[in-house]
Image (cartoon, rainbow, N blue to C red; front, top):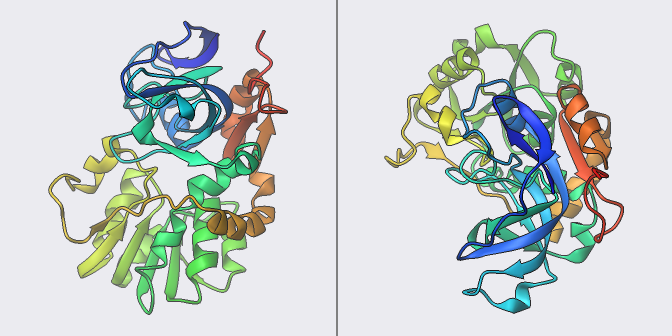
Length: 306
């Protein structure tokens, strides 16, 4: 089968069909997304093992299960999303392949309707936004990062709190965020004020260090579930210590959240590339916020790769 693996660069090549280990589900990959995580691996910013299959977000249709699992799982669709310590392509073989074998405990069941919609991978990845709304009401909030994720988060919380967004001066989506009626600050100026909550949506060392200085005493730092643990050291925080002001919101995969995000997707469509070809996806991945590789039906592989 074909898969995208790490060989000191991103490589599309022939790899063996994965064996099914205890607790794992073998699935035909219906769709997979190339996110900032795969881009950071490609740039050498996040380490991974040579030969590892990449891919942290995707949908599979189960075709077999390990002997210790219920065979009734076969035929169902499951969603893979990144979690701290459990990121496909970094902590285990991911989903950018024709077939993938993944621990059931890391998979979320998903309806056939949403499993077969390419946009679902965008909705699912952004679904942690729902939990953020539980923390920000009547707070002073700094969003550190200036991209499509920042835009969607700000759109959902701007009426609940006082929001400031830290952007690089020439970022393309800066003006789009400003249209939401929130204050935009340059990174160099964010330490002029202290915030109750800082939402981290950047992985730039300098920007992160500045952002942490902007948190009030006893304030909270919110880090999305797609922030790799390998980069937590930049924050000077050990996630296992249980620091009281560190919040890791979880993905909330349900149809109600998907319906809300579906309405917002028209604002993001120009930032996403949908293709059924791996070669096109890899060649264009740095030109788009997200690249989604999807088949035309549940029985078709996500790429025409021969």
